[in-house]
Amino acid sequence: AEQKLQQPTASPRRDVSRARTMALSAPRALARLVHRRLGPWIAVFVLIQALSGAAIVFRDDLAAIFAPAARGQALGVEAIALRARHLDLGHLTRLDLPQVPGGIYVASFRTAHGATHFAVLAADGETISSGPRWRYPLRAIAAFHHDWLLGTAGARALALLGLGAIFIMACGLLAWWPGARRVRKVLSSRPKTNATAAAYWLHTAAAALTLPLTFVALV
Image 1 (tube, rainbow, N blue to C red):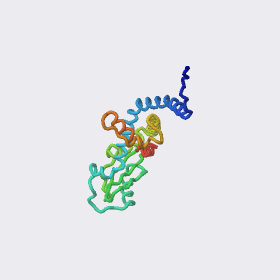
Image 2 (image 1 turned 90 degrees about the vertical axis):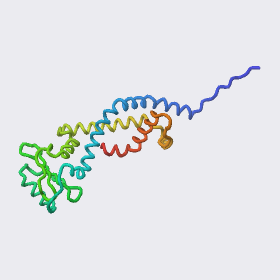
Image 3 (image 1 turned 60 degrees about the vertical axis):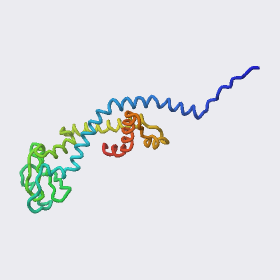
Image 4 (image 1 turned 45 degrees about the horizontal axis):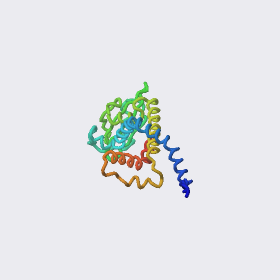
């Protein structure tokens, strides 16, 4: 008796899934390569911007290290601005107000030659320091954060690096993305035996959870 061999029939749904996997494998491999090669360099840029940005956010707390507390009665903003104009450092272009009561004021000046000078004033109007940005380290850090002390060219370079960081993040997300239905499961299943796998999980989980905040910060 002849036995007919029955070949298993392929499922259309399985064929579509396999085709999608093959179509995504090449872009994912390229995204993973780009993310691994360029990611460490972009991470250095992000770290520098994060640290200098933190110095700006907590400038009043850090100012206690560089500036003494006011000894006299605190003055109003108009009186502080008048004192700053009398320093003869140039045209007063900006006056940064303290974030905490009794904090310091930082006045920005533009000289006749186009240079930028700063003056740090206590809440009682006393001049703590004045001159180029290097006389006040926190102001130098703020200037470095905004344009790397290179003016317009530095600001444009920072913008391009920010776009590059977003691109690297997108490559990492594409290389890692497990599918909408498996995201929660992948993020909650932490490896416990392999240290390398645990480190990779920590990297991907932290990146995925902080991706929206990082994107807003870079933009």
